[in-house]
Image 1 (cartoon, rainbow, N blue to C red):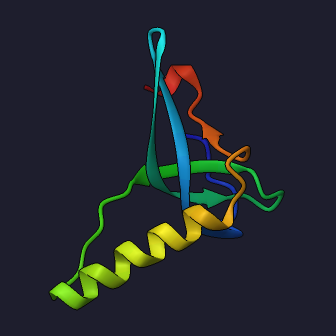
Image 2 (cartoon, helix red, strand yellow; image 1 turned 45 degrees about the vertical axis):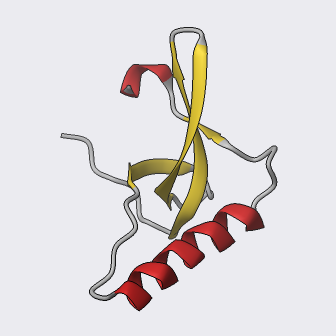
Length: 81
């Protein structure tokens, strides 16, 4: 089994998925290697132990998605769908 690279950071980010001729975008938690390249992403689902905690998580997801340029969307490689 291949070993994961060291995680240098993670954040929420806009990710584009391609299905056939169609594209759609979702927010995923992305993990970066030492070179700043996305090597792992998870299914992002806002969560919280209270309504306020859930709202705070949603606000963090939105703030991190807005921080990145709309031209800096991560495209999921086709063989991982």
